[in-house]
Length: 404
Image (cartoon, rainbow, N blue to C red; front, side):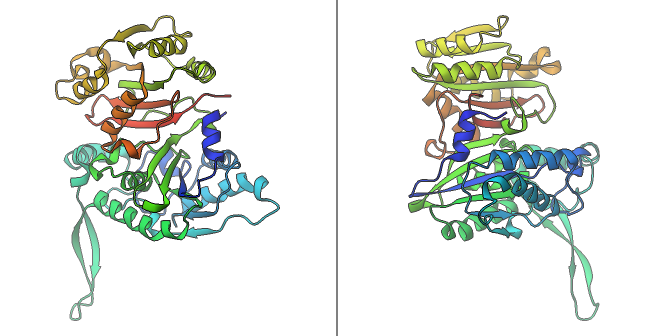
C-alpha cells in the first residue's frame, strides 16, 4: 500500500523547465541481512526479500514515464535494477524499455578496511574510528593498501590515507556535472547505494559532507530531486526515502530504538480529507505526546491526527519559534534525553503540528541547507529521529502523504 501523494509524485512529469531525478537504493542484500559493511566490494547479492521488494518498487514506478536509467555497476544494484524493470514491464511491454547505463561514479562509498566486517565487530575493534565516522564523517580517514610499480622492485604495496566521505561527495558532484546536461527536461531513474544517494542528495541541495549521516536511506527507499533547467547545479528535494510501497507505515528505525522521534506535519487551513487519511495511516503508530502552535488550524489538525490516540498528551505552545528553540535544546550537550531515564529504555514519539514555514525551517536546519532547496508539501508527514547515543539527528523521510 502506498500513499496518494507518493503515487502522484511518482506519476507526475517534470515541467519543461526542470529535470526530475528519481533515486532508489538497492534492495536488501546478503550483507544487509548479516549486518556487514559492504562498501564498494562486490561480494553481496540480493536476498529473496530484496528481490520481492525491488519488484514492488518497479510496480510503484509504473506511473512514471522514465527516459533513462543509471545504475551502479555493483552486482546487488544491477540485480535490483532488473527486478525493477520486471515490475515496470507491464507499462513498457508494447514499447522499448528505457535505456540503461552503468556508471562507476554511482558505486558505493569505498571502505577498504571495513568491507565484510560486521557492524558490531567494527564498533568494538575500531571504536575511535567508528566514533569519528558517526560524529565527524567529513574528517573520517581510512588506510588503503595500493600497489605501486617501481622499476627496480617490480611492485610494492604502499599504505595510502583516504577520506571515504569526501571522495564520495567529489564523485557525486562529478556525476551531476556529467549527466544532468544530457537529459534536460527528462526523468532520470538512478539505482544506487545508501551512501552514494546521500551524497547525491547532499551535493544537489548544498548540504555539506558533515551532514552525511542525516539522510536515512532504506533498502528500496525512493527519493525525488528536481533540477531547474536554468540552474541545474542547484536541486530541490521533493521527497525523501519513501517506503510506503513496501507496506511500511514509517521507515524502519536504525541506530537502535531508543531516543526521540518527531512526526512533523505542516498544517494548512483546508485539507480535511488529507488529514483524515493521514490519521488512518498513523493509527498503528504509538504517539506519546503532541506539540502544536497556538494557530487554530494547527490545533484542529493535531486533534484530528490524534483521534486514535486517546492517551497522547496534547500540548499547545504560544511561541512561534518553539521548533527552532527545541531543536537547539535537542542538539545541545545538555539535552534532556541524556538526563532522562525514559529515553534510555524507550522510543518516545511526538507529533508536531505547526505552520508550513516553521516545519520547513526546522528541516532546513537539520539538513544544513536553504529554504529554496526543499519542496515541502502541506499536510504530509516528515520524520526526524534523534538516536539516544548520537547528537546528529536523522531525517528518516520527507513528504509522506495520506494513504488510500
